[in-house]
Length: 104
Image 1: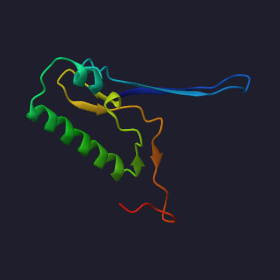
Image 2 (image 1 turned 90 degrees about the vertical axis):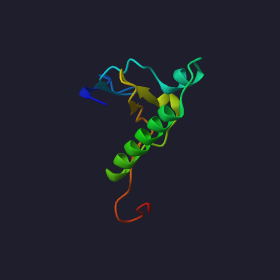
Image 3 (image 1 turned 60 degrees about the vertical axis):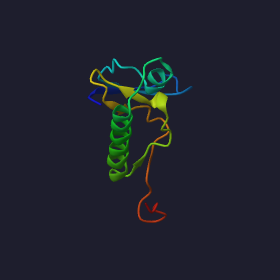
C-alpha cells in the first residue's frame, strides 16, 4: 500500500487517548468482505491471486518481525487493479528479541 504520510495527535490535557493517523493510497475496490458478499462471481484464478498476494504480504511482515494478529476479509483492501492490500495494524505486534523469541 502506498504510504503518503502520518501524524500523531496528542491530547493537550493529558486525558484520554492519543491517536496515530496513517495516510495511504485510496483503494477504490473497497474491502474484500464487500466483494465476497456481492453477487459477483469470483473465479478460481482471482481467488488464488488474492490468497497468494496475502501470503506474500504476510511473509514480508514476518520477515520484518511483525505479526498482524487480525487478518480478516474486512482488513483486506483492493486497489483499482484488484491487487490486495493488508490494512488495520492496530493489533499488530513486533516479535520479541532473542529471549522468548517466537519460533516460526
